[in-house]
Amino acid sequence: MSLAVGIIGAGVMGAFHARLLREGTGHARLAAVCDTDPQRAAQAAEGARVHSDPLALIADPQVEAVVVASPDATHAPLALACLAAGKPVLLEKPIAATAAEGWRVLEAEAARGRRLVTVGYMRRFDAAYLEMKSVADTGDIGTPVLLHNVHRNPSAPDWFAGPMPITNSFVHEIDVSRWLLGSEMVAARVHAGPGGEPLLIALTTDRGELVSTEVNINARYGYHVHAELVCREGTISMAQPELTAVNSALRHASAYPDNWVPRFAQAYRDQMQAWVRSVSSGIPVGASAWDGYCATAVAEQVAQGLDGCEVQVTLPPIPALYEAAR
Ligand code: ISE
Image 1: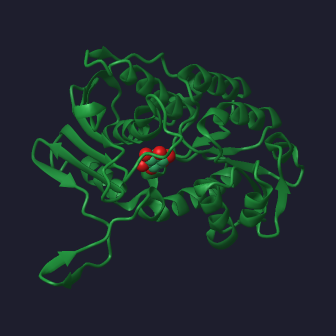
Image 2: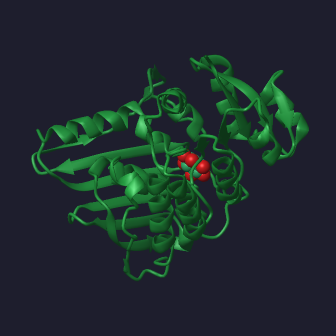
């Protein structure tokens, strides 16, 4: 049996998810694509059904599960529509544009008593992060004390506004740090560089660990994500995932991609395959609606510290539906 998946949004991420479903995902097929631009939808669909109304795609009887890759502000309403239709959804991050909306998604899922929402924090499927976590979890290099993150984009897209470096980009570090450390964030301090960027964000966890992140959305030279976990007896850091380096003209060089898709292509592939399997097995994978809520709620509170003051970060108690997955 192959799972019939509909995709909402045919921009960079939606088109890539469509390609994954057309070409590289076992036990799944691309059933439909929806975009406000019919040409873009048809291009990504390559013969699958095309919708211009996302609610029509969700209601389409030929669509069994949904990937949402439309703009951030649409995530919560579309997740709620998927929940109302009882259809599993792989929701691109962030879960919602605001924590309050994210909470509504979580509440609606909890009211159904069944996990249907997976939030697409794909770094949880990245080989380098997975290896960091498995080394840290052995305890061989001692207990974690500090996680250094670097998150650089070559340039901010023109739709980036207000605190989006935090609520759209830094949410990745919030999620992956919670996942790597198994800790919750309790305090934050934001330092802004000259003219407001880059940001240097220092978080403290409930175990006293420090999480430092450079969020640099105009780094110019390329897309670059790096992490180093410092433990009491050693460190583990990400080696650059390039396969080759070129020696030429007195230089040794390797390339940077210009966006996140090449860097995390395999993670997206593995996430899609794991999600498809989880829909048929009923065993959830990846970031839950609770994880999605936590990332957005922490980001929103961190953004309140843009004036440089320390912020105390709080989260509500975890609802019972998500407790088992912790
Ligand atoms: C984008 O939405 C992503 O998810 C990328 O991983 C991140 O680097 C970028 O800053 C976001 O805008």
